[in-house]
Image (cartoon, rainbow, N blue to C red):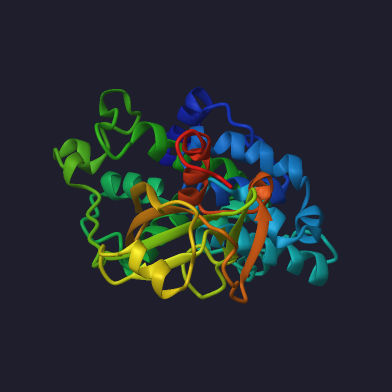
Length: 352
């Protein structure tokens, strides 16, 4: 049997039951692929069901306000994914009469859709023969063919794409791509792959030459930046202040508590409130300190609770809300985690 036929037979016998499996609606395939870009399958299933329940089709997503989209997306992180989907849905609604494009090049032009996602949609929804190369496929193919080039480089990825073009079955492109991804996700895993029962064990370079642990080779030149966030939780008559992040930065358009970012971890809350002429009914307290890790940043955050005699003067992007309405606003995970602690705080901090 050929490589493809061995793969498809394995897939038929071993594929997981997933809510987007056997789906041909390009919109739902798109949603599932975007969610899974930075989320494990087990975690992504509930988010997928929730997103589809709120926005059952591309026109529903296009018509929704961005704040609602971000709120439904809350908890998945990497919020640019949701914003890009929203813009792309509006493009489909406005420029394609609400019909998802049927051609790879048109799909690829949509906001936030790269080569992999375009190929996945084109092949699974429309059976177009474009290889969908995600991290799972890169790993599997690197091991199978013994490719020692750095998979973080575009030229290596392009080389693997061309390899896969020679393997893909044109009449079963969608199933082939799903099988390739499933092989990497469940069989040819990053750590401790299941080589002993792999259908490719006798023909895989890495297995034959004991190179499984050395492949794929991946090297990034990433600089990790530390940032120090000091959040101010003002409380006055069951009201507080939140602000929307509008700069071209992390968590764009999400809401958070008023923030003072400092170059180091040193932050004197008492000196700050004195400088800002903020009057507190009780001493401000640091209620929570945490480290939040992002792809290229470490966020060291402190949350201070300030029971004030009046709400301080607002900046342009700040608003006053009732505490009970906080959950209505889309926030980053770190802010959500702090607000979940609010019940504990009420028992030992005066809220006026």
